[in-house]
Structure formats: structure tokens, C-alpha cells
Length: 205
Image (tube, rainbow, N blue to C red; front, top):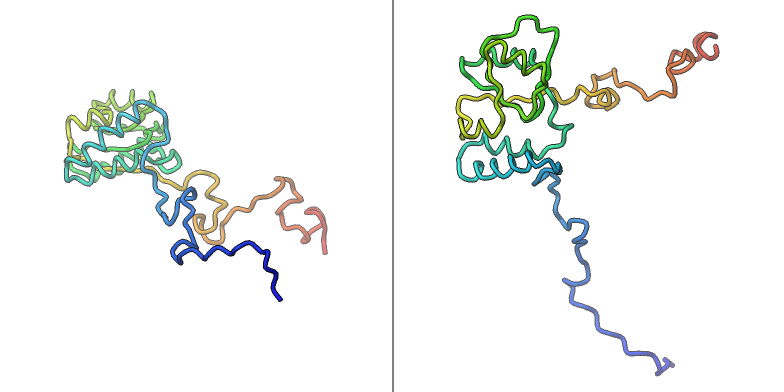
């Protein structure tokens, strides 16, 4: 015999309410690309507004690409040396402006500086700027480029090598096959130096 003093059982909710979506965790959204820069730099914020307008009002994919790269972290916006930049732009028509959403650095190994380089970058080191200007070139900012070439015509969009940081040597799939660098406790003669093969390397079997 069942007891009669139990509280009434509430009816089950509708099937569509049995399982929910964790909205705080993002729900079903799988997109992880940035939609705004994390930097609080006011210049980058103003550039973002400028290229948001240009990307919306022009049909040029150049402005959309620049805007997307303004959102990127510094890891994904690597710097480039003037030697690599000069090599890239040498195959382009005369008068082409090299655009880099990142930093341009000097390279002392480049002895003969090309004449008349036109470079637009987010940042340029002082020594690189001095060498470019001394060779009859010009250095533009991204807002000056927007005034001069709003659709990106006559430009070439460059990017520095991404996987040059030391940490990428440890990543399988990024480092060369068979050359993934191990994390070791020390650089001494007893660590990762053919241990067990000879007595001077820890021990000998």
C-alpha cells in the first residue's frame, strides 16, 4: 500500500526544455576569431574604426584583410626585416607600396639598400626608418595609406614569417619531421646526450 501523505509530483516539462544551452560558455558558437582588437592602444582603436568603414563601403578585399590583421595578437602579426621585405618587393612593379600590419626591423646584413622603397607599416624601427629615408624611400602609416590608396590599389600586402620563435621548435607538426626539440631538465653532459651509451654520459649498460 502506497503512503498518501507524499507531496504531489509535478508534471514533466516539455521535451524542448529538458536540455539547455550553456549561454555563458558560448552556446553552440564555434567561431573563435577575434571581432575586435584586445589592445587598448588608442591608435589601433582608431585604425580599427577607419578600416571598418573602408571594409564596409568599398568592395576591396584589401581593407577586409587589413582589418582582420589589426585584430590579431602580436604572435600572429610577426615582424619582418627590411632585407626580406626588399627581396619580396623586388619582383613587383615599380612604385608598389609594401604594406605590413606589423613591425619593420633593420637588418645589418643588408649592405646595399634598395632605392626608393615605399613602405607602409604599423611600426618601423628607428634604424630601419633612417635607412629607408636615406635611400630616397618613404615610410607611411596606415591612416596615410587610407587617404592615398583607399582600395589598396598598387600595393602588396606582406606578412613576416610566423614560426620563427624558439617555442615552435618544440611543436610537433610545425618543426621539421624528426627535428622536434625536446624539453630537457638541463643542458649538462648527462641529459639527453646518449645516456647509457658511455660512462661519461651518465652510465654505460
